[in-house]
Length: 497
Image 1 (cartoon, one colour):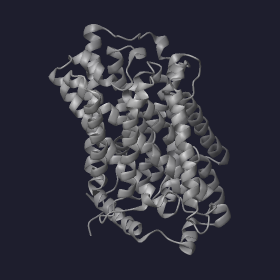
Image 2: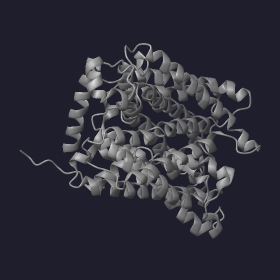
Image 3: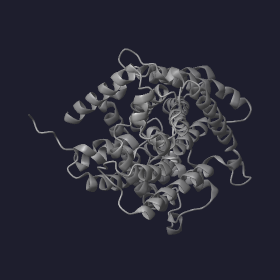
Image 4: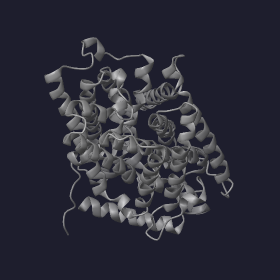
């Protein structure tokens, strides 16, 4: 029998970059200005390190929890909170898809130099949404090559923009103020608004935990990979942001077209390099959605089988792919696209940031109950074997949990709550209204879904291990159980390959 290939440190770091790095977030990050350098360092220490260690302990301890964060929270606090996290984790995806749909025709218009009318714009936006939906019907959405190709192209864009920035700064000087004082952390409302982008760029590090059993020394490799991966991602974003800042002052960076605006200035509007980067950028938008679609849709299907989400999300096709969740994604994203002309008529604009910021907020909300769930599970399940255990005692674990929660809450508030009466801050009101509306819908969904459960699981402290409880009170549907086996087989083949 051939010896199984060990998962190397470089594999872990590349996996993190593949999952976490998002090219379209570079422009909002650049809008923070030079102070983002200090903020990245602070948040790597205060958020990434404790968050990464905690999710890796949970991921390796409860490796059979296919629902990830939603299952960890359900284990600790029961169906009520498991349902909420499942909803927050799912709803961020159609919001993200809608935001990228708005970005697509804007990028095409910049590349071609032609302003698109309303009907062609809507047609392109809807085509983007439904191409993603129909591609997610296939198992290709679960293929490693899509994730890897998308990651390579995204890094290529970041390196290109950063390289152009160096050349432009040498030949033309910096468009932004580069005095030492600008690199200190800024507490102004404009900078704080976009700090959630940095936290958003840390989400997904739990992917490393999947490979713990294949590492030679997971206790050493996991924390090293988290820190190295976080630094690598920070370096990629900062290099790209540097390129944008070399051409455009931070207070003038467009949140949607910032990358292409900078490339147009540095490489020449309409140049071959400008067109090439634009095409690659559009491809990465598809790559983001397609590579994330399977995970998000499967978590929703998994939750629906536990009656924590509506039954439509549990529908799978003959290939075992969750098509029900994919179709609902398309409907929600399409509705947001079609309502945009009405919103424009009443004076609203900047739809990319409106929906992208809502997507970020819901993803941040997902992680808030995870930290107290970690403390709860350590308390009620102390005898569980832990391949990796976060170092430190109870006091260290408590601090490591609540500091990130405070940062998540403050970042969420700064993103969608007006911090003063300026026009820029008042423009956050639509985001706040949208987040509250979808949160209320989520509560309605939770209550309706709960009506279909014969019994309520209340958490390990009250009802014991959820696996034993599910075995006694109802298991997953046969289609999802079959899909679990296929996923395990696919992952094994992918690791061996």
